[in-house]
Length: 591
Image (cartoon, rainbow, N blue to C red; front, side, top):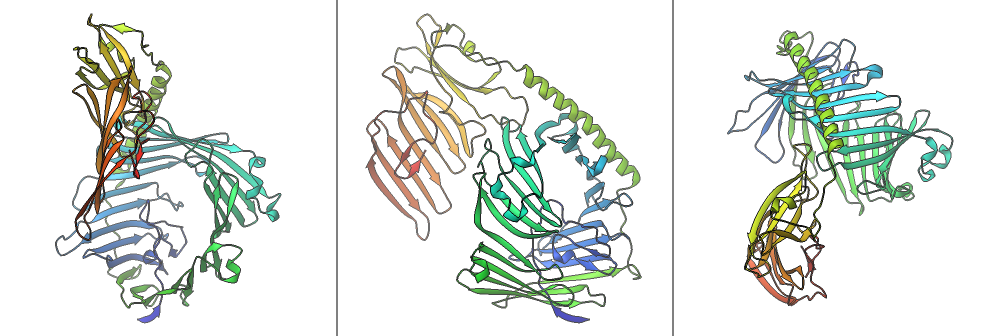
């Protein structure tokens, strides 16, 4: 064995367990502990997870083309021996991406799979997740002319529902704002796309982006920003590449402004990154930065050391003691930090000529694969039916007919508009005439089960002496809808002529009290509580007088409670029909 120094650089580990580039003889995964050279056929990794007593063991098998064929992992500790989880990767002969991935736990007969199908020009037309009970998700892609359509579904085979739709349409090159085109890039090839992603989960929630690509030989600029009708309009990222190397990344604001600061990468002659700097681009040449990283390599091409510098020039270093085998694959990696702490990762590598190497036994046989492919095909049919049904219901959904305040009916259900679903109804005397009035709360009928409405309506119905009801007030803002962020409608009641609405939060809640006076319903009181790990704050606010009491309980470092009285008198009381949740602010508390 021989020793050397190397660096181990962690990167994001999202989506699939690793990413394969298809390089012959040297696989490049998302994390460097999976990198092997010179015909390795099997890899075993053992490591202690940082900050815990848990250990991880990983097995990776490579086929003769150098592609990952099998992946297994388990986590174990002194209290749990762990359970192996396996993934099998099956490829067409010359493809570098698998057409099916079969997944299962050791000793479990239940299997799941990811099934992919490609069409013309390599377009991935089907991406299906098949569980034991049927499809759990499905993506269908079609391309008509220059328009790419992607539709996403989720659920089971018998109940697949549309989740979102994405349309990618070409834009004319001249639509690009010229501020994004460097002066020396004028006249280069420009392609642009309008990408509209609509989520059906929250009443057609829109994510709309504008994207452009500029190419000049091996160089490329990619940029994208949110369209004017989407959340955080105009915000985006501008990135420059040289081949596959990222060179520069900037931020976009307002859809027409580019930041003077960002990230810049520098590479050596072998294409390896040697420096990464974040700061103002006009100051980087003078070694003036917000933070900087330097990378050093050994003769095997592995990183030897990483140095990190803050704006104040404070330096920290990471090194790794690296043991190699005879084929220049490392078998032990020991980290060394500035305080001499660290961890160890060990690897055992088998090559095709070693006598104790053997291929894994695949459970994804031809019959199993065919069954998953049949399930995926059936899911496509179900998904198409669900999508057509959804569109048909959406087209046929009539406009809501609303009762006017002059209308009256003996049946209170006449005040529940067509295609609305009742949440709750409560009774009590609100106008002190001795008759039980009604408050009904409802929301739109859902076209999809997963749908989360952005509207919840409350109507107050006054009972008349002849037994009929009249509409007294209506609010579309006083009660939290399903789609509200961490605010939940939990109930409504009438107490001593006061209409009481209750909203809950993840940690806390708020009670709103409305009273009928001066011909309308007005907010006269609020009680609000908010909690965090280290404190609880609450306020009891009498809007009629303007007086409030605020209490704060602090739990760390010692438990203390403070109470404060104050006065915040409004010119006019909020009206039930126009008041909106979160529009009150008293003593730095918003509710």
